[in-house]
Length: 79
Image (cartoon, rainbow, N blue to C red):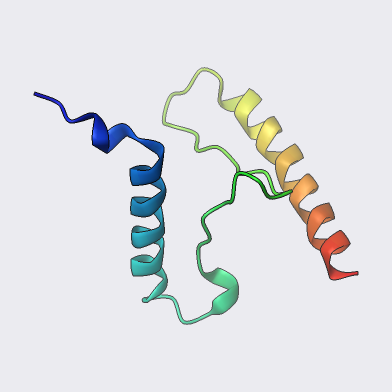
């Protein structure tokens, strides 16, 4: 029997934070450390592209636009 707890948003947020912290323990450069995106932030997360994905070109174009948006948000937050 499946436990719905494992698909709940609070559980998934907690697990993402735990694994991100665990990975970051092994990355000494602060600029390279991973971050969990806050859904309420101005930043847009990029999407992963799986092997042989027929929509890879569309996702890549979307990711490029998202990265440009995130760079603009970075610059705006510095001021």
